[in-house]
Length: 208
Image (cartoon, rainbow, N blue to C red; front, side, top):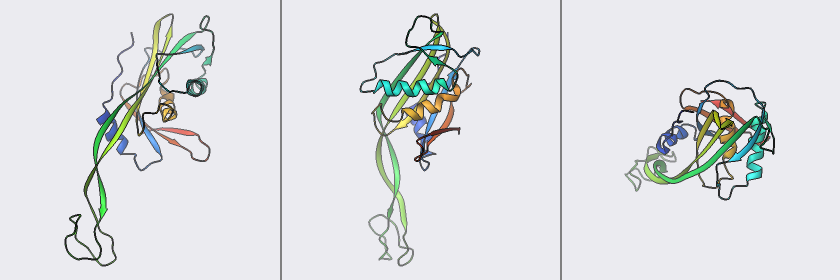
């Protein structure tokens, strides 16, 4: 039996996601387990489901392309396939966090103003950062589990913070994030920064 993969709390994911908020990418938390390496082969893809509103064909094509890069070949007939690979794609939330943001101090007056700041020189912007706002976010999770004759072989799971519960968004970051951990044991939760190239549309994953 495969070990139970770690569940990453929304707060922990938010803390790490915040570290890359200035980057054009998403931070994916990944946990994976494989008792021993297995050869790549043919597989039948199935879903634990349901994934409400998901454009499944487009999503599954993305999974298929990723698995093909690992040497796996998809078959649409369950009988005779080497493996049954089951995916589970879910969203949780919304969760709420408190964030601080800078607000400009009135630069015309040398006295304490609305934001609590003091002007530090005519026409020079001063900022006061103790203003807060409440931000809603969601956590999307993707797991892939491989079986042969109902025996579990490997499992990988990824979490990512998202601004919307729409399952048709963000999954490319998850797929790219877990890609290097197919049939691998991560040994712990690892963090992968996935960046999309705005020109080519390609996704690049780098261990963080």
